[in-house]
Image (cartoon, rainbow, N blue to C red; front, side, top):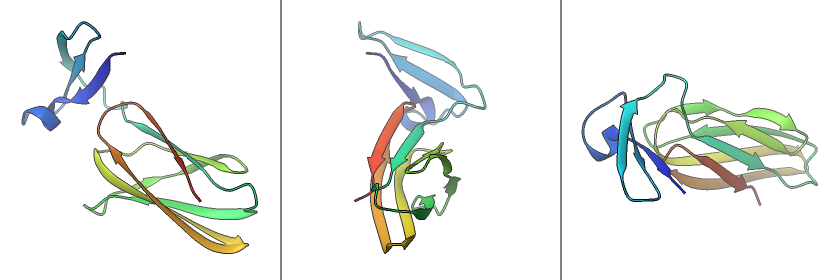
Length: 112
């Protein structure tokens, strides 16, 4: 399976991407402005309402959009370790998970 990386993660060249193919060959190209990783966040089914926030150490935030009663999706605008915080009022609880976003792909996080 091919993997896509931002070139600035490998060399200091912004706005480009590198694809490492199954055959080991590298391909580069211009990065479309709307290409981001995706994080799918799943909350416990016992939670009735929850506010989900995502942040990284640089204090960037990414908005998590609710897609089902227990699922949110966000597209972090940069690589790094992202902390996902879910705050529930019913039952009262706070859930915190972290994920290291290192490439343009789909990630899944389950709050527990």
